[in-house]
Length: 321
Length: 281
Image (cartoon, rainbow over all chains, first blue to last red; front, side, top):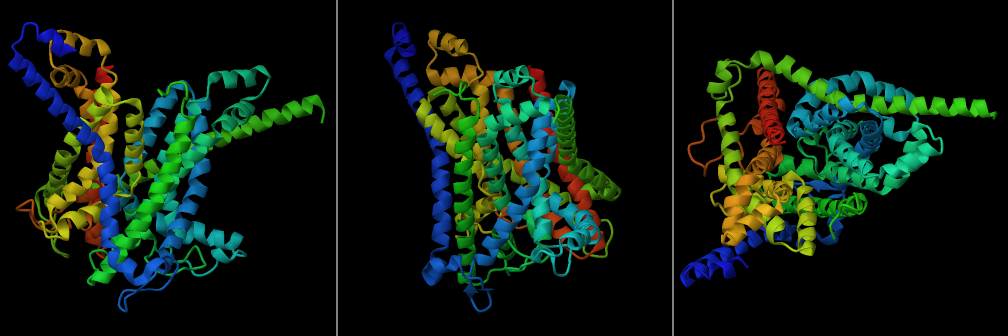
């Protein structure tokens, strides 16, 4: 509409020029926005293309075989899928309760002056790189776990098969603990967003019935926010599945399915990090691409689920639609 | 249970749960304290002038530094920004200025999904695009591209968020003066939101600065100066990783020092963000 006003005084060329400018700029912006879709297709295509060789050789059975022998070119993904899920499960078991507790504290309990500083601290926590958590785990956490926590766990819970066996310090449980620390910030901040979107009317109604603070949280807040918190946990799972560096440094990189949580293991991301540059046969490289494809598929599905759950809850009245 | 006993029980449970929440919060923030304490205790003593000016020394020699890795990380961040910033900002402009609601919802949704893709996967993609076809193999370009891919959705989301804050009347005034829309956007809307956009870019840089996994088989690492962007390049996170898994005490000390510098760099980036966004309000 601007151009119709301008055309009264401006020469026709100028108008054409600005129209062309508008057109070009619009197309540039559109292309940039569509690059999101292009990237997604590019990632999937590159990984698929790269794993072509492995798919032809092993087919679907790749996913359920547990031998990993690069020398004899026998490959199965099961130990890594197993390791990925077990470390992520441990991480969620530790991180979700702590995060939800913290989110409750941040939204309903903490004194007002303390909330913003605490949120900043959690943001700082989120910005510490994976490799530095790994460094800290190798030199500080592992020595302590080996002589402190793990022997105690073995003493108390040794009747369970997965707390038996020799303690090395490195291993699946250690990886789970470090991943838990790394997903705490994201689960906390998303849970906090979800709790904040619970209408105050809910809380006031519960208070009005004479509920204590905890009862308000349990009855009015948590039950209302349940789905969103579940979404936060799923988002945390997505992050946990893909954690690479810290896990690579502490898990022990053993491509076997062990019964004990103290035993070394391996995850999809850690085996790629470890073997990618050393892969000297095409088949080995192709198999690593396929592991990447499995990881990509898992994280995309998990993230889609998480986004749906979070979007459904987060402030439906403010959402434009 | 009598009324009074029931009341006491509820009070007790309330107190217990409140305490539990406080304990949770303390446990969640404690790792930050631990990590800062150890970074400073283990790293500070190895930081000296040589650390910032020298190349890594072979095992057993004293006086090595990480100068090449520090410069390499900056090179990679700049390369990543040349990929991530233009695409991210233009995409953000599309969302706030042009896109329809439905389309925008989809783009936001998939941008968030992209955000959740593990960083190592981006490394594989850059490897397949640049290293494998030898264009030019392990190089700063490949590392920068991997990090740049990761920056796109981050920059896009933050750019949109700050652009929609620019009052509608600014756009209307510019259009009423006869400015074509693209000029109204680039001359009026963008400058108004510039601080916010820079904030978003710095945040995205801080987020990818510490990434190691996508660099393992793209930038590859280098113990010498990087003479050309088509050569392998050292990066702080890579160097920290290689030193941390080495068996030498000397290198472990260097790894701690490198970690301290890297965390310092990232915190500086995030702090400047806080500074920028505080001034705006």
